[in-house]
Length: 126
Image 1: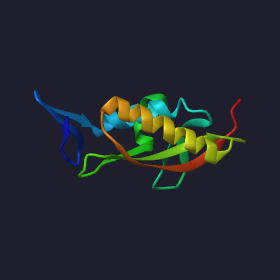
Image 2 (image 1 turned 90 degrees about the vertical axis):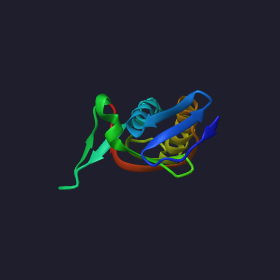
Image 3 (image 1 turned 45 degrees about the horizontal axis):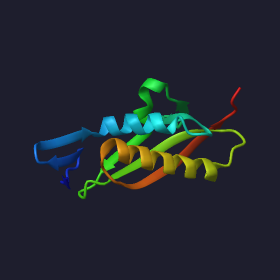
Image 4 (image 1 turned 135 degrees about the vertical axis):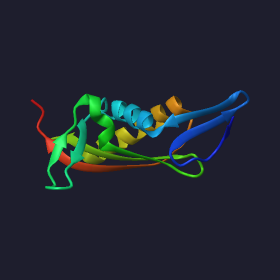
């Protein structure tokens, strides 16, 4: 399978044709993997107007993730997350990165170039 570069979508060429994967599909899948990780409360949206951080509902996880597909067809992901109070942020981040990298690469057949994590808030879990 050879990979072709395309900025808006992930793309794979094979003997029968081309498969393109929309960035929203990648974002939604990555978000669903991320929220299953230990210490992650959920994805966050930050309001540009007032700077308030809100926890996104499960059906809008992709809004807390920015997906970029490079010329080399490699994926970069930027996560905006809310973590549980009292966890080790570095341990949670390492776990998130390894889980997302493995599962998104398996799901898409594309390579992850980088994963950036912005911790936007901390929540006490009841």
